[in-house]
Length: 364
Image (tube, rainbow, N blue to C red; front, top):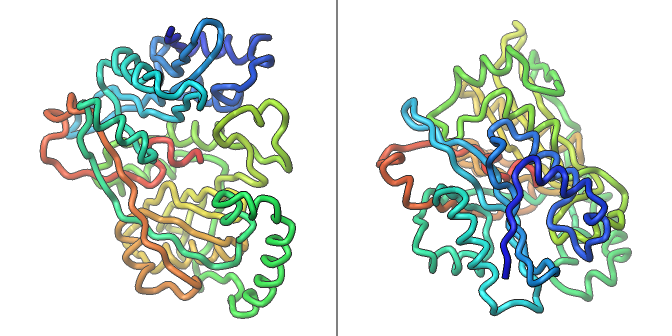
């Protein structure tokens, strides 16, 4: 078993090489690879992708997203594990363990993980390297019918009957739309839609941060906005069909919104991500008026005809639970973050904030 590692230059050569097109499956989509290469927190020597080979056959892979932790004016280099896969026919040979060990070596054990499967969690626990970092509570609102999205992953029967589910959704939503109001903003409030974070926006962000652990700034946020891991397309092309994770959505977009009052003052900045019929809130900065923030989110849910909305922002989640007048159902969620113990002294007992979009959560 051989583990090959790719840094920025090697990854770029790999995804543009002729062999990449001939692989029976690809370990990363080309546009995702280019996003990794453009990451302003990545250095030329950082390992971004690990490939496991049995002879000439690729049997597994593991991605790493370079980042930086911030505490009390100090900064530490780190990497988030992302997208680990092992060929089903090769399971039981310790491939995932070997990939993980090599990633630890490449990153000096400076690793964090979130959004992991139960099976991966068992592997991480057995390594003895990790401890819990945070377990924020989340909330998902179900506003409109979206059976054609929610049910097919659960059972093959639903996959075979997507046209029927689409028809049910159309009929149900025609009725549900009768109860939903038209999208309106409070009097005097205007929404300015922008393509990136400018000087005004970053000044507002810096003045409204609350002890963020990742502390992403203008360069990092604009990198995210300009380099998505999902692209909008009606169907998955032949290359991305060979990727075991998501590379294409019917619709994927970021909506960056400046919220101004009647005097033109900036009151909030929201970055929403839209994936098909679902809306999330990766980044939020505001002046404390949660009613105004919810009014903006509510407006966008209605404007975009979203079926679901997911939020982990603690104060906004609590506010929505009490003031939600849109959803058919609310579902509590929980997200788990783990961190290698090498950061124990750096983190100490201090409190910190993790934005919903930190790690790789804003990209999917």
